[in-house]
Image 1: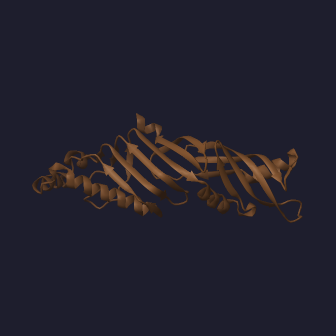
Image 2: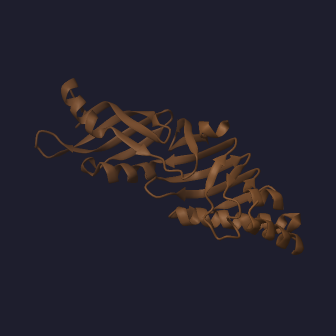
Image 3: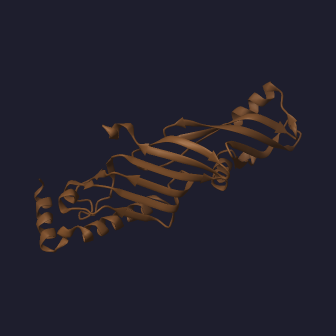
Length: 236
């Protein structure tokens, strides 16, 4: 073992931290601070760790923990609501707390993450990516709809309405694909529909800076509920 880690272990024993309580609270604050640095949007963030022993800490081993937030958004991704993560454990760099290193998750054990994507957040994101259509997203039970405007044959902007299929595009993104499109209340013929459907198809990343993968989603009134699990390689 690194001599520095041995020295830290002796120091912790001498200062009465072997109970793990102060060490656990300190690491909770360290992890919470790391998340707050990574996430431009943070509301009501809470981090709770199971009691941590000095031995586990020196090995960078953390057992059960939870992370929750009312709203949480990372760079380049949408803001998540009702964010809830439960894990059986993780591996971080040993001594990250005392050496002032960034807390980076190297491996996750059995983990479940769930959060919601709201209509307003998806509307803000699709308008950033497809501004020409001025789109608005509506989420109903099992269905997603788009409304906006488009320029048809150079005759000025006309309102459109489209139903859209939502599918998993990758382990880290979802895709909206129009399968019904009306412009000014009139259904477009297939060739014209195909042209605009291609332009309106939208794949959006869900940025989570941890080794997790998207496994399931559910379309409910007003929100898309998304579920994640630990990456496959971390199950071995």
